[in-house]
Amino acid sequence: MLKPFAEELGALGARHTLTWLHDKRIEPCVACRLCQRDWSAFGCRHDDDMPEIFDAILACDVLVLATPIYSWYCTPPMKAALDRLVYGMNKYYGDEKGPSLWKGKRLALVTTCGYPPEKGADLWEAGVKRYCKHSRLLYAGMLAERHSNYRSAFMDEEKERRARAFAQQLYYNVL
Image: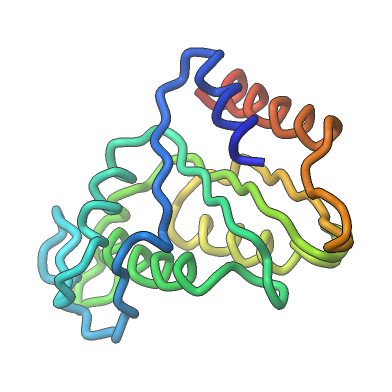
């Protein structure tokens, strides 16, 4: 789904960057709160790829989280990145309350699941909506498509049309 989605964004003139989290080294958050010491930077005890991801998010207008849903939630790399971002971007966890460094950014979801989306992606969407509220992000919607069996190809013309339409919706309503 990302291919027609990204192609449509490009055709509309939107610049976009695709980051594959499974290609990145993302250590799990250990809630040490080192990130809370500097309210202007990510700051973390781990020496991994998250500062690069942090910088890319700060530079973007819209963040699109794309993940398949396994067992009603996102993949482990996505969860690890979100755990790190909630602390690194939101400087709320010290003795003093600091800013949300990504406040006002829009966030959208692109996902696939094995159940009908209202039963397969609903918990993921609810969790992200809560994440947005906590982080002061603006939720911009979700494209969720079902893959009901492994004997047929996932992508078809209708899913491609919906992926392109979602890209257009984000472009015209958000960007």
